[in-house]
Length: 451
Image 1: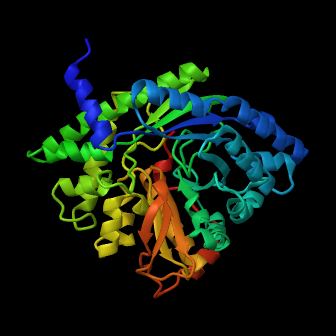
Image 2 (image 1 turned 45 degrees about the vertical axis):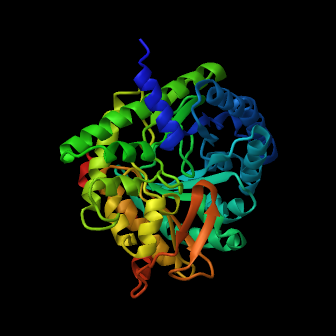
């Protein structure tokens, strides 16, 4: 029986508390598009994406109208392009331009998968693609890139870490006239999931089916609103979050099931992540403050985030037939109104954010740093974050944006969901250059031996 109170509660969540489906992402395998001729390969890529995802935006809009559920983004993720480069050779940027054409033809807002998986070393095509990332992201608008440089099973590829510090810096330089937007479309992972629907880190893993629909939910505003009514202890706080996460995830399950049926594509997973926006009332930081913190970043923030992340997972996992991706709570500074405010006031610093990443969904995300930050410092930030992921058997990532020509206290404004953020201070008093220049591989931790 349909419960009128449940219907009204959902209406309130959507109209007043910023509840939405953040993305439906179609994953498409491009393995059958490999060809020794790069021009032929690119044409196969374009044809397959436009054929498979041709109706993705249309179907998403139909579901929005019929169910009254906002679906903010319709996206595509593809097989890591370095695997095609390994077969075709040639300039990898040709693939980036092909992905851009496909994005424009299908109407999706992002295509992810200009990626390489190098956690245990480089194979054919990997280095070529990684070094082409700055150019690829400078000449495209809708293409996103990611590189997995470490895992709990393999350790950390420090040669890749060194290169990527330089790549992040160069990507920012090449898009300096656009507020360094290129670096906002590049993520460096440890333990990257193969079914993540969220950009910029989405790619279609080799273990995935030929084509699949994955859904990413949102809802920080809904959780914050529920906690405003909660006067109990932290155990009761956790229960409120679990019940709320269940309701949010059921909506994601409904949208994923409908999109799968209408597109004739298997339904993959629901990613439970609470993905914030710069909109007032849609902030993960505000959830933590509703628990009793004066401001996000003060002592106790990491514990509060651990509670939130765990409760979201426990509540959401019961609401979906298949949970995957990242699932938890995102803490992207420039995309979260509360995080932006805390960073501006100086209460939230990179060191505290790093501690928070030990218990959150991803890692150091959408953090603006001074434009004169040396490449080796960026590499060291990546290495630190990868170490947290490796040792704790969890996904961690780094998406930092060197603000070319700007210093601490100034700001970058990306607009839209990417938001805006202050340039946060970075420790430049001493250098990690000798450590980074050693290269090689940080061995996998003892906990990797699970067989």
